[in-house]
Amino acid sequence: MNLNIGVIKGDGIGPEIVAEAMKVLDAAAKTYGHTCDYTQLLLGGASIDVHGVPLTDETIAEAKKCGAVLMGSIGGDAKTSPWYQLEPSKRPEAGLLAIRKALNLFANLRPAILYDELKGACPLKEEITEGGFDLMIMRELTGGLYFGERKTVKEDGVLTAYDSLTYNENEIRRIAKRAFDIAMKRGKKVTSVDKANVLDSSRLWRKVVEEVAEDYPEIALEHMLVDNCAMQLVKNPKQFDVVLTENMFGDILSDEASMVTGSIGMLASASLNETKFGLYEPSGGSAPDIAGKGIANPIATILSAAMMLRFSFDLDKEADAIESAVAKVLKEGYRTIDIMSEGKTQVGTAEMGDLIASYIA
Image 1 (cartoon, rainbow, N blue to C red):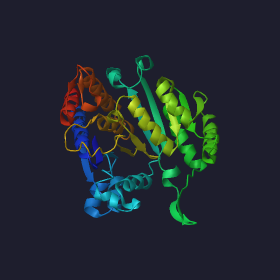
Image 2: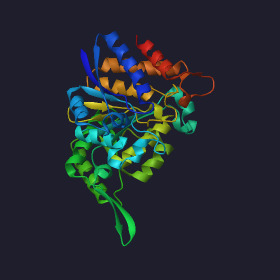
Image 3: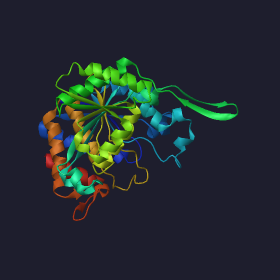
Image 4: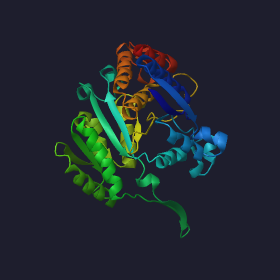
């Protein structure tokens, strides 16, 4: 099988971690009789440097021709990078929001798995993490506050900013259905997170989710306010299976979940539309402070590549092989600096990629 994959290396540590994911994909393809055909695309700061804008129509068109897109981290240092002297609509992150919208990537999947081998890197007490945990955060990605109307005006001589949070029932229904479908293949539980005691948008969210739940009698549905969910994630993460929530809440909770697993460098991500197409990226930022040092953790990007094989190309066996290789490397004690603990062997970005690729072969 020929895998047509778009590649956005991104900014900061992006090119380093994407290179290792491609290395692992090539190893899996060779082992299982596939070929990878990569199309290089520009987005974010890298696109600004070449085209003056964070996303071009050409990149969108080329991405749509691919079966899936693998992406590194986007953005730079807001204090020192010239990209952040531009108006907000022309900064790197604006390109990320725009490509999600252009490709209709409304469903963001962020698994948070605590590997038994990384219990020492988890900041929670051992009695909480005993036995590990495996939860999936399902975040709506193309609506809500990030895509609402916004403006800053002067009212009565005082600068005042407005941001609009808008959802319609169709946007909520399609993400809810995805969450329930995934829960059917997992622990058959959905925790819908909102702020229904304050926000009208959350009250509509809750109403529509309950309507969708009627079509899934096997799924246990619970509602949880977002502030309580933030607390419960560190109090008892094992209680969760699929966490369904809107855009901003999902952004915050998924980063919290990443640290509960030990490091954001371990958190993969998939953004899907209504077809098999998806954009796959690590959940962490571009970490410009360590870019070029060869110490970034590539595992989140490698696991994102495994998700790409599973969800966009239906190659479950190949995805399993990558995930098993990651688990084996961790079990044998290899660690990048962000997950390093006493008695383990510290390795760099490229060496971690080499190890994982070698275990697939």
